[in-house]
Image 1: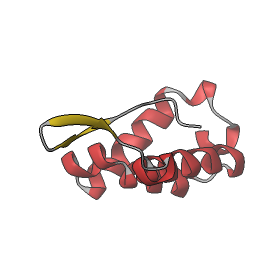
Image 2: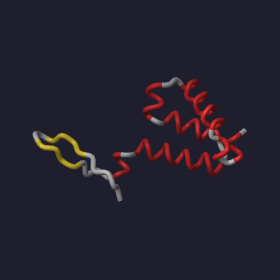
Image 3: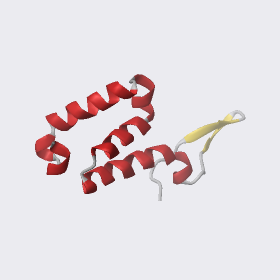
Length: 87
């Protein structure tokens, strides 16, 4: 069940967007799934892929900048992450 109720312009009225959540939030769902897989498997590649799939990140950073940002974040927050993601 989706908790958000986005609206869309329809004629002169605002109407609720009745598409299923999977259609409205598809790309962000994959970012979350890759992030979870990164934690479960300890794969930095999944971290990079999740960041590169994020629309905000990909719109503002190059691939090299995104990878560098991920490395900096993993290093800064390494004590909160599984050991496989720290190295």
